[in-house]
Picture (tube, rainbow, N blue to C red):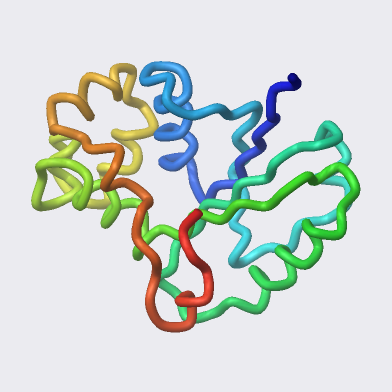
Length: 161
């Protein structure tokens, strides 16, 4: 039986940091590669997908805090036509990574997660964090509450997979 190959396209460095921690430290997800690429704002192209192995499952992680889905729809159609893509899974964040972390941890504000001075500093603190697993554990991170809600509005057609 062959092992599935998962390739993530995520919106930012924070998402990449979280996924790599879930993969290596928590060992609760599989990820062959995690690329930072905003599928809401930018179009994928054949050159970007040439490095994918045949049978790759592509996972798109994206924010739902903007009201525009045309490029995402185009990217989904494009991916489904690619011969080396076995399946496309979408994980819409409701509304963004900060909201997901507040919902899945015992914090009231995202800056509390990293003990950052401000919400804007939390992103750089998260990217530099060397012990994210322990930070998440200390804040009672619940993986079952993370990335598990379906979005509303124009993104309602994208169910969290």
